[in-house]
View 1 (cartoon, rainbow, N blue to C red):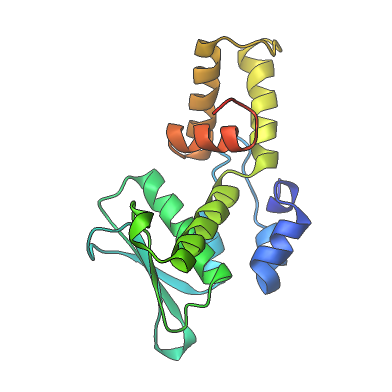
View 2 (cartoon, one colour; view 1 turned 90 degrees about the vertical axis):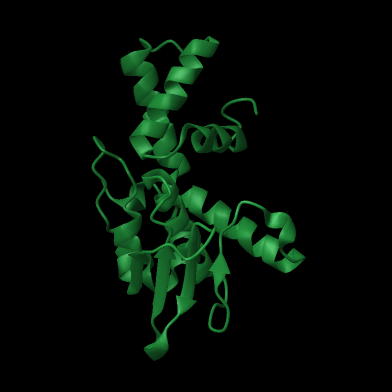
Length: 189
């Protein structure tokens, strides 16, 4: 399966522009359907390293010679690091970072209105990237058929098991998957 089967042509062309076809051709192993954020980042020749630079999850900044560097907090969980990489890639693709760099922090209230909007856009992009709707839909259908006998009637325990299974399949936190499913209208918030 290729990424072109789980992302819309519109998402690919609008977000990845000149690299859209390269992203579309990345293969996905359906048995281990984790989006390869590192491979996507490598298409843009962004240097990624882990280093503690303060109380934030990640930063992207311009280097000399028209290249960019992404620095990720090494003390964050692997799931958090993946989201942060996707978030910082969102800044790279969506914002002008030639003279500024972006830090991802927990408290957005300290940011200006434009910075809050930029952070929100990068968060939305990251969620779309690592938890694509088409892939979630396929995984839900498979889970219902294989683990729930095709029965679409769920109790709370079933729902918790499904969310846990989805979060493990996509290597995201349970809370991130719950928020994503709620935003898609699949579960109640």
